Image 1 (cartoon, rainbow, N blue to C red):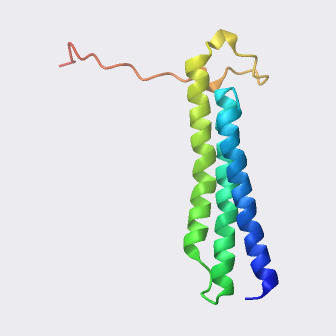
Image 2 (cartoon, rainbow, N blue to C red):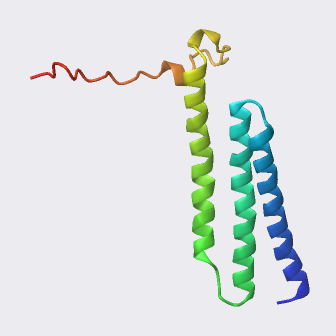
Image 3 (cartoon, one colour):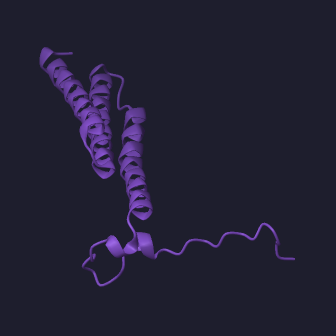
Length: 129
């Protein structure tokens, strides 16, 4: 492996570490739960992604071929981190803000988070026969 390629791999690892550090700092220092959710989600996606790219480059340059493990982990992270952040944000909005306090969404329809019907609680005292 040449020195220039090792520098590129090291740069990816350092960039991943910097994104992880920034995300951790954002999680600790930001004041609003929605802001605290945003920082680690982005740091996880970008920081871990760059570390996986560095690992894949390292294995490819050693002659071991394409690493499918790193590719599958990166795809899993890119799909799950934003979706889990979206669900956490919707839950925070639903539990924190009443429907009347939310601004107009500007689409002519109500907010989907507050418009969704919750399933009825089962009657545990007198179950239907």
